[in-house]
Every structure is written in C-alpha cells, then in structure tokens.
Amino acid sequence: MARKPTYKELEQKIKELDEKDTKVAAYEKEKAAAREQRLREFVERMKKEGKILPKEEAGILSYLTPLSVLEDQKPLEEAMKRIESESKRVDLDEKSRTPEQKYEVNAEASPAGEVDRLARQYIADGKAKDYDAAVKMVQTSHPELWKSYLAKR
Image 1: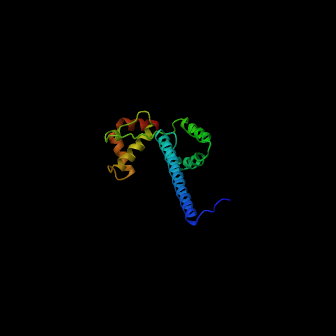
Image 2 (image 1 turned 45 degrees about the horizontal axis):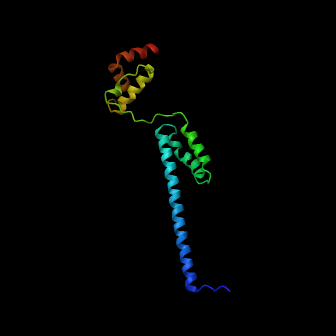
Image 3 (image 1 turned 90 degrees about the vertical axis):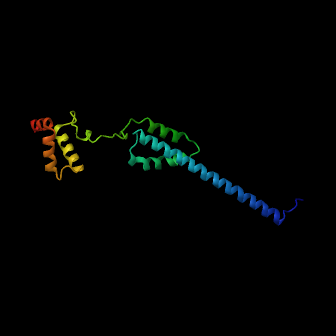
C-alpha cells in the first residue's frame, strides 16, 4: 500500500507547481511581446518602403496579430510575403528644399497649377497677406510663367 503524502510534502508540491505556472506565464508573455515586436518592425519597414500607408498600420497589425499566434505560421508568412510583394504606393522619403527652390517653377507642371502653388507658398512664408497679393508677386517674380499662364487661359 502506498504511503500518503504529508501536509508539508503537499505544500511543497503546490509551491513547485505555482513556480512552474509563474515561469510558464512569464514565458508566454515574453513570447507574445516578441511576436508583437516582430510584427511592428515588419509594418514599420513596409511603411518606410512605401508599400503600406501610415493610416493602414493599425489595420494591418490587427490582421496579422491573430495569424502570429497560430501554431502553423504558414498563413502569417504568406500574408507578409503578399504585403512585401506589393508595389511601392507612396514615396515617404523626406525631400528637403532650400528656400530658393520653393519658388522655382516646375516646367512639367501646368502653368495654372504652378501659379497657384507659388501663390500659396508666398502666403505660407508670410511674404503675401492674401491670395490676390500672392498672385501679383508670382506675376512680377516669374514673368515667363505668367506669360504661359495667360496663354493657356
């Protein structure tokens, strides 16, 4: 006949099981944080590459997160490959302009669009108080543009 465990032995066994549960819970939490970090890094990289828009970030994360907890990682990998294979949708590289370049005329753009852009730039920079004054500044500062603008009207 098997001997019955003592109260101290049972207490020790419970303590050991509690420690194991704590370790398992900590491991699961660490594993979940690593999965989330991996997904965030992936989404950030895709944003930088212009394959997803910043406003899509939360939706893509909510789509990928449930896939990341599946035992079979194939659906997650396929979804990530599909996103990576997308063509570049937007160029998010920072393009700086010098103050002089703000007022250069883009020959490829329509004259009306350039007059409007330059007028708005003059207003934004505080060089004109309203749109009419800004258009007059464009007229005097960019006579070639103004001639082509009038010719296309």
